[in-house]
Image (cartoon, rainbow, N blue to C red; front, side, top):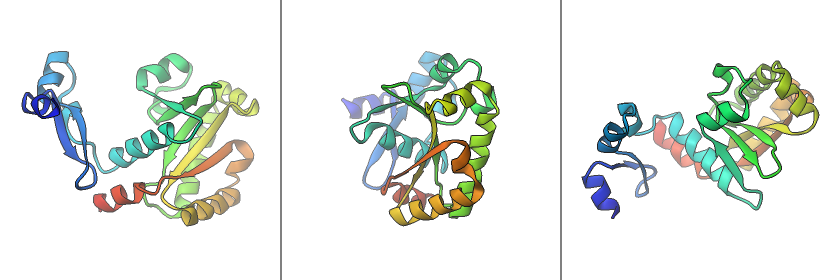
Length: 183
């Protein structure tokens, strides 16, 4: 079935980490639905690891989360400025909102600075600030190893990020394969 969908250009097959593949809409499906042709192209070197790590995080463990698509972010947070709504967000069954940041291979200090900046930008939005005060908003940093997780955690403390908002660091080991592939 999948082979037929690919041959009819309903799906396009792309390399994830050899020999694994992932699928996107094919050119025929994009044309039929009136969508941008860009949606049939392979994901780029930043969006592939970001989407992959977010998907693994959202679906692993006992506390299942739902990754919000752009329309859901707009519906769930209509007050959120457009430029802040482009990042990946998850929400769990209790309504906990999570901004997801993915470590794309930068130094722990770089990841901490970017996480702190993203946190402060969102805390400037009164509704996010209220959610954070009620412990219903957190930032999740996805990284490749326990060692990197500990280093990021230390760097976050020195940046003062953990004072403003809860930060959870999760390890997605297979993320390292995608980061190596991009280089």
